[in-house]
Image (cartoon, rainbow, N blue to C red; front, side, top):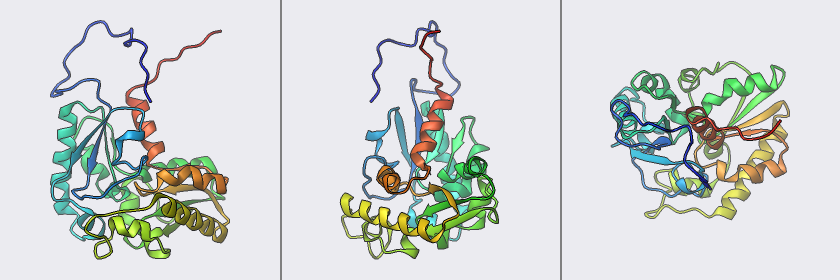
Length: 263
């Protein structure tokens, strides 16, 4: 929760920013054109983030086309249009809600002036530097079978480097996530139970780490996984990176905090 005691005392005069309509904005987040709920912590649920979020729906780009489709080139134009709308609105940084948007990192970064954070996977090269070459980064993604070398390479990840990857939806049984995202298993009203989903995430991560003892940190690719990250971390004493850690970082670099203290 943000509590402002006063305005930023460094603000005296204000000037219009080119093509920006609103001010005091935070992150602009592009959403899939899909209707499903997200628990607090999910990128499409703004309530748990301590900074302003402006959403824009990418018209006609849904889970099916982004994750399961094979024509990525046809998605570039609507995604870029969405990013430009958010920038014109006044957002200081642009993000997207699904790790599989990694494929479009360079397309969007080259089309707007704001810094772009298209995928949680942008953190993987950083994590590799933190844990060293003798340990692996454990990527917990939605569907391992749909996470291609192209997705990884687009955000600077060497697909042949120290990675271990598991897909929650193709390597494990995760009905609480299937009912939100998987066509044919998603009901007319997409729904999920928090306690059951958390229990599944803990069990999946514990099994994954037990089978891959070389893992030195976990990377949660999916937008829907970070609501359970703290519970997982209580069971598995490893660093966990997610969309939440990326968005916190994204906001901090475009709105650097002031420092108050004493000497």
